[in-house]
Length: 168
Image 1 (tube, rainbow, N blue to C red):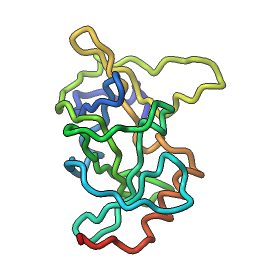
Image 2: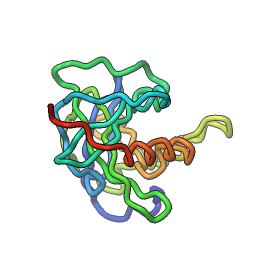
Image 3: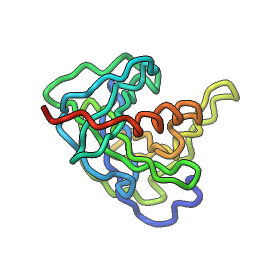
Image 4: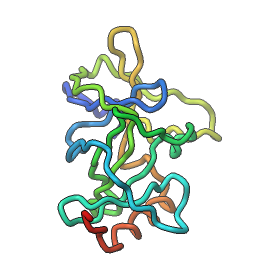
């Protein structure tokens, strides 16, 4: 969905990665969890933090900072896992995304959202749905279905097939 397809006021969950504020449509967010133990899976890419047990289901967790080529997430009291639903080839995939902190749920009108910047052909910005403007600041609105490349998603999909770690 591009900015031109946003014709009504929508709610977005905002969260921090590094010094920047990002947002995703609340309809894609299942829940926000306090940071919990993540079971590392060997031989996965750096951005794949591992998996968590969410009520008996295996949920892969990714470090969005590493996906966006920011430094690895340092776990603090504010670190959380945003559990989102992504659409992949017509199938819904549930993943957790590490965030430095969750800010708030906000409403943005279509006139508060500009198209993602065009920065040439070598830099990938297709995962940015638009740039929200609020109180003089920009918020990068993510198209969560496009954050990962297809080959990255195959790793995530493979992690879902792993058996759930016990709550110990």
